[in-house]
Image 1 (spheres, rainbow, N blue to C red):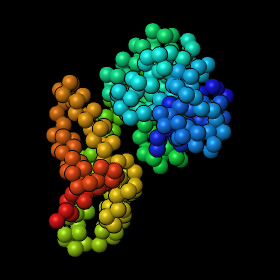
Image 2 (image 1 turned 60 degrees about the horizontal axis):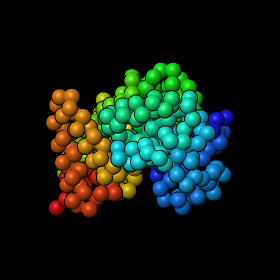
Image 3 (image 1 turned 90 degrees about the vertical axis):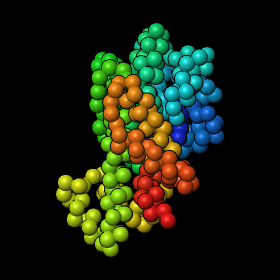
Length: 290
């Protein structure tokens, strides 16, 4: 058992922190900007709450952050009330936010200056993966720090891998989102085509999902897409945030991402339709718009 702090109790962080308490058996203190959510978490799992990130991190062996973006991450890690102000030397900061590789490297440098280890560890698997404790965790950092952190991360993960130095976890998550963007657009076009052709979508997917066209997105999203229901999983607003990170990094490293850039524009269309909180499979709604 370790002393753990968890900062950020959104749809992902809330259950992840719960797994650290229940499955991992750790002593967990939580902080959330909306204090009532931290109180709700403590009421459900029996952990402690703190009034600032620094207070939550005090005496913790491992501190987890899972917030919205680069600026949110800086606000809960740096400054007088950030976790680094409260962390003890030798502790490890593990960031589960999907953020830029740049901020990951920035935080690693700040952590090292405090004598603290750092791992950027964005996750994939969505809300269901977080709730079921089966997330894929893509890590960047020093190998020795990773090996210490891995048994703790395992509480909410199915797969945990070290991808390289600080920032490599975020770069891997970017690749993940590139793949998803193209897959969902292809699936949306396929279902739209099948409907226009008068085919039975259920029968078609039953067959093609067992061949080379099969994917997680097909298996888990085609039924709700076919039914025109888009309130499951990862929101369009979040995906556009992630794709902005991807495209910014691509401009920096010279990668050519024509399909990703196009799908990002398509998600902009979905937002304009009122689908900001629809899940990413709502690309089909754009094609079916009259």
